[in-house]
Image 1 (cartoon, rainbow, N blue to C red):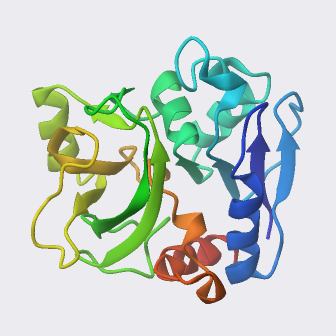
Image 2 (image 1 turned 45 degrees about the vertical axis):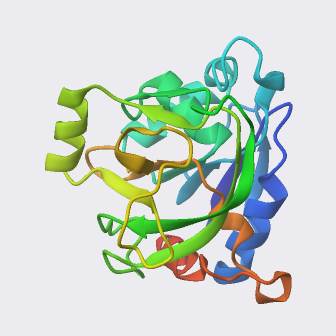
Length: 227
């Protein structure tokens, strides 16, 4: 069981992610500095949240060209599961591993609060312990989480089952506009569903002692990858 969390200058959720994975899998991920290019052959790679390189230029744009990313992209294109959260999601769109763009929130304000997510499409890779329609409540913390795609790309995402999560109400009935994202999309897969990018932070909703373990089923699916 080998997982890697890549750390960039300005990352701030790598330890939260490592704690969440260790909590469900029993094995702590390796924290890999972005200048290290030897990743090995891990069962899972994670790009965590934070403000890599201070979010200069565009969020995730500089990190997308860090030395480690060439190998991350190669492994991900070869089928190694890749989870990218918040700033990591911004890196995904910058490297074109998933379609779309992430713009400033429609409110032009930083958003930090709990939101509800509805699982739209199941993935054997990441959400095998969840059912389509399941709801989890997790925090968001971003200023550039407005996920934008063209009408044609949105149709392709829906047709291919690539929309992973949408922002919704507490009952999962109504979509909710959190940041202006197209069709309330909070997370997307690549075509093979081996790559998942999402803006909310499920790693911060896995510990009952902290008052929220809503995302434990999500991480139970990740634990299956590592087994």
